[in-house]
Image (cartoon, rainbow, N blue to C red):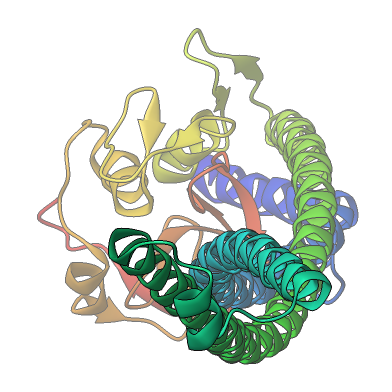
Length: 390
């Protein structure tokens, strides 16, 4: 009789605890503040990833524009080198022209001297009359004097003839040199003009390439600035989400603690804080009491206690009281199913599990960053009973 009353009291205690848990736990139908903030952070992260792609594209375009600008500058430099070579040839030609002008001036001086001599000779002959052969013969007093006068007259005529011939030769040389050098200079100037035109075209191309590079750099800088701002936003939102999640988890832990205390009080037992951070609850159900005693401990993959647990590690401890693994979710999926679950049964699917405490609630070790807590049983889970051999 007393056993029946105890069981009934325990059932009532569970019902009260579940009502309290349902009242204090956040509803799964609505997103929590931390989930909303995390969603904002995730959206910011997605923008960061897209901006990073744009930045990569902008930097690639900037790199290509820089290469094009460098290639154009190299062409301009090469064209400038050709222009410099042409100018050097023109300078050399100009030196030859200057030298020719000096030679021409010298020739003109020589011509002037010859013309002066010829003029003096003509003026002398005009004043004294021309010396004829008869003059030479008649005026000679001796044969020796005749021979001397004849030789002088002959030499004078030859000298005159040479002077006239030399003047003609110098004039021809002057004209030839002047014409040759001017033609050569014109050819060089024409070549230089072509090279200068090519250089100007290349300079325009280089300026266009430089403008494209500057525009690409501006885009890249803007993308980098926007990316930095968005990364800062993402970090801020992530930090805020983590803070909210921690606050919510703490609230859940306190709610579960209060529910455990009230459940224990209703069952005539007691709830007290354990030395390892969990809570010992006296509900009359050993498996459930063990589950309550681990509330608030952190999740750690592969852990079986005593300070951290993963989901199957927690179930193993609650069923056996030992900090050792008895199986995984796939193991529990093979156990006997029940359509009328009772506190202490196991809730499981292929990837998660926990201890059923009644009223559609279970205690579980959820995931990394979370603590052991009371949650609603997901619709994807089945209920199984532990083998009696445990």
